[in-house]
Image (cartoon, rainbow, N blue to C red; front, side, top):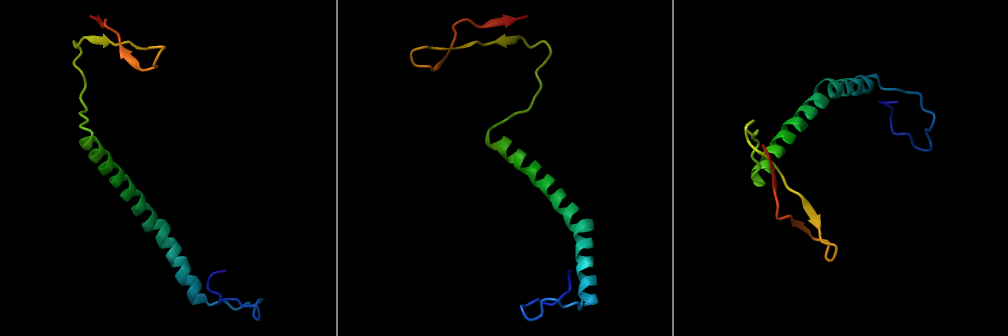
Length: 96
């Protein structure tokens, strides 16, 4: 239980509790659940968003949607059985 003195081998069955220490500990736990944990979760969300933005800038990622009339291209990759490196086929099929 919270608020008890450190129990040594000589005082192993002490029943004395300091009520003030129990009240302080209960207030600490209440503060953690009501303030600290939600604040930590919101900080995590903000930092994750910042990290995504930084990573996208570092990799030159541009998020745009294609126009509806943009032709769809199909690129087929094949593996050469000799060296197993992917190579681009000469023909690119375009859907209209």
